[in-house]
Image (cartoon, rainbow, N blue to C red; front, side, top):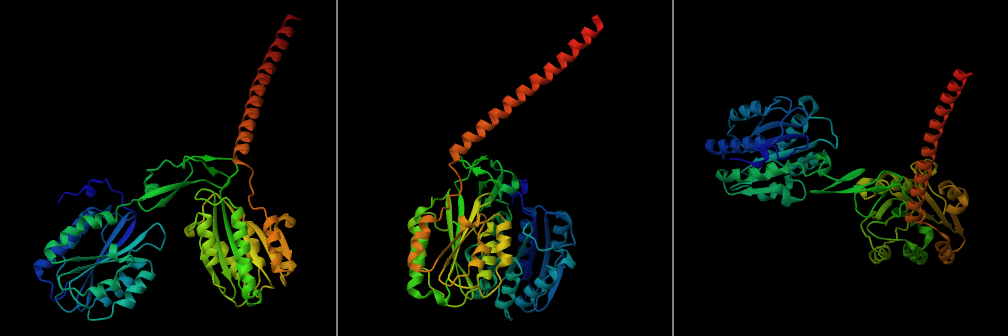
Length: 467
């Protein structure tokens, strides 16, 4: 058939793709030919090459045969030719064995797979028409854990349960069923679209001034550190940023006690009330820790005060130890990670609350947080150690460190804590414009001065000649 995709209208992202095809007894030779046509059509829509998409084919029945390694063919023509020569094995159905083989051998670097990296997708497409004679659940899980995205295509009297055990989530996108091999071709278009990049940042189809962030089928713009995204959602200004990512890191240890934990939740909500919470301005995340650390909700999940405050109220008290160091590491590595909802180029603020001495070392994690430019507020109650709080707090420590002996006095701290760290962006805008004017005026003066200098020299020369 004629496909839009092979006309080069679709960019495919670099992919290591392995087809795992069932050629057991139940697959008749004519049906196996239809599977090969399907493979050929999907390959036809791909951008095949060592730096783009590499293709391998694993053929299986009771045994597994590697027909094409990822490193074997560098061109589409050679691949298609190799596929046309594959013969059915016509024995049993050892699907688990085939997946195991793909994981250990077909997707190994020795056989031409690329090292694991976010830039290269690993994809397996399994085509089968029966019930496996071995276990597929665990081995498929291992393959998925290794970063392989699995699509499962079932034909005719296939066992749907095992099909679902093999495929990646969401199952709706990764499990396909066709009544017979004669109609497997209708899946061609779907699979050519699967490999089509809708990553508009990668293809350059965006109008972001500084940073482009991919979203499924779309994108959003962001700015580098020190710049603010303007209202048009595209351009960046060097002005103060009203956008802040704020994360509360809350001690849920036994010593806090349930009634006081409720006061802590009220205190968090008192601070949220003061923030400019919205999709564009302040985002809030919440972490609770005791002997373990738990993200209660990530940055950007709730972007209005009502939902945020509801979520804070629902936080369950952990009531165990005090691993403050572990909590700070989790905050830096996970919660303030762009993959977890943090925004690039946005001021980062952490408010760490504790009521006692940490059971682990906090120095390194606190130092790392501040080196990364996080603004750290340390709030202590009761038996919290002054030395630890001061280690956590940003400079000047006086503005970032708070202590009270009693939980009931925490609302006073909420009143004092000033998070909106930036001045009004408009004022800053005016300032930048004013600086620009001053610079322009100085440059103009400088040009005039240079002109004046050269004129003076020429006059002096003329005078010398006259004399």
